[in-house]
Length: 386
Ligand SMILES: [Zn+2]
Ligand SMILES: [Zn+2]
Image (cartoon, rainbow, N blue to C red; front, side, top):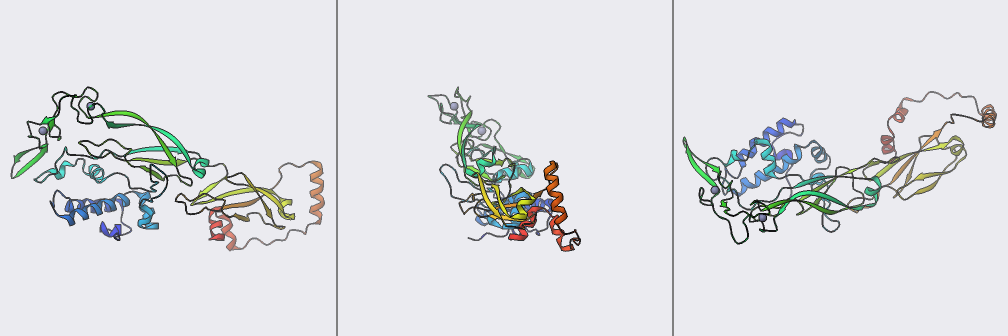
């Protein structure tokens, strides 16, 4: 099924401001909210579609990815190793979160009739863990362990919250409904039951391990497999490793957000790497071999006689591996001629001899179009190699 354009979904233009997007979303979310359209499948679809579009367009980073790459830029990639899928730019948070943030409380919709029954099975919350890794780890991939405190289902009562030998009973105040209704002017207003807080159950003998909550906080050690080629800002989704659900709901997911440390030589753009190599004037004038650092060690490459400073050499396949296994990037090494800061007597003498032999400098100033040399290395290389 093809996805509709997110801007179209939210009925805004591509240049819409953050607040325009927010207010349009708010309007549409109210209109299509399931509580206002009970049993209306189409409204529900639209509601979800809006929430998805808003999750992307409200986040400036995701929005720019979407602007550049469309749906592919913000959808989760699949594949990879056991236990997780490396979902690059995975969507964060669920609809309830977004609405919660915007309106303060979900109760806004729960109001006049038909409110969603609370206290049923609820999915556990998603968790986020920020993981810093070295540049080498991002290049080679790694396996590391992290420790996260999270809410897990209580083993003692298997999540029911009731002590051994007892079981929860229906809440007397709401008769197990989780909601109480009362008249307010013309409306019947449903509120989350204050006695059972929406669960519809009361526990006379609470489980001693979780004090009736059904969940306990535990520090859990998890092993995280980092795929080679991962970049800063990309996320690993570990399905089911978030917090335990309640009332028999499934657990949430854990999102490990990766931050890669800077490298001392290499700069990364996509899967390509860039570095600058200082060389002697004599090497580029006479031609010779230079050493270029790579991810695996050092490569020797030839520079031809008469090579100019600023020349960029390309080492194919020596860049970063693609995180989704689609090949390897290239390494671009830019030659920078070094001028000696201190000379010995002998060196000075030799250079003076050379100076006498070189033609007098009568180079013309550089032409206007050479101003591109003043732009950074990155742009120049892009021009050269496309
Ligand atoms: Zn318990
Ligand atoms: Zn109740």
